[in-house]
Image (cartoon, rainbow, N blue to C red; front, top):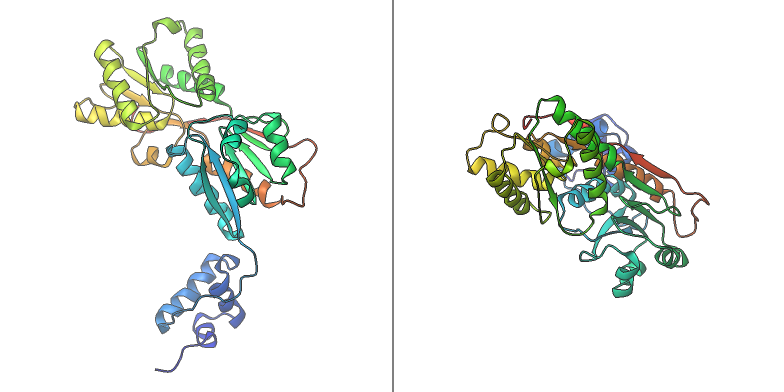
Length: 328
């Protein structure tokens, strides 16, 4: 069989040879429709491209630093960031601070990742002046997610309004015997904002916080299941609000095992809208993970060690919205 070359592929796909070359060496530079035509021509001709010998850009590393590495939210954020950064040859390096919220303390234990990384995203970390100066002295661009740092670019959740609107939604659906499930480990601050908003709205509706049954456990599916079991054992609830989707998924599992009909016997509502929430038809508060990843990526791509930050960095706050599905 004669050797297939780029000219043959270009002729069959109806594109230029240079377009075929871009598909082989940098497919992200070609629009999807054209790229698929070229791939189809390659398949038809039986062409097997080799690996490019020259890379036009130097790969860079993004350190994603967090105390909650096993969280489904972190998984979804990592996937969203990878999608935004991959075309720019920026690849994530996960840094687990092992439930340590303080960036200063985490750096005192291990700062080796700072020299490895070209940029960083700090998720739910407390960033004090000492840690901020340390990263700036080393010229490491970074962005904060779900933690406010007045001297750095940050993307925040309006957790208070999210919780407030969650309570309004459940009340509007006619639920009056509402219980709450929360996590008990690290990063309680933004959870407290969610619950403060939730209880504030209930109190406006005439329901005191003391009268609302509440259970807490680990931020996990198993923790959510355990809380659901305990709260239903001791209280007659018609709805449960979970401060995160992960624990709500545990609630769904428990109800299925106990043959509790959702939502006829019990309504369930989460917070986050992780990818699993949609597949399980969980009503939740959407916090726009993809939009946050896009904002962070746009900022970091525009930065480098040679490009200093603005004197007054931008702070973005996103308010979650209700996504109604089949659990309410």
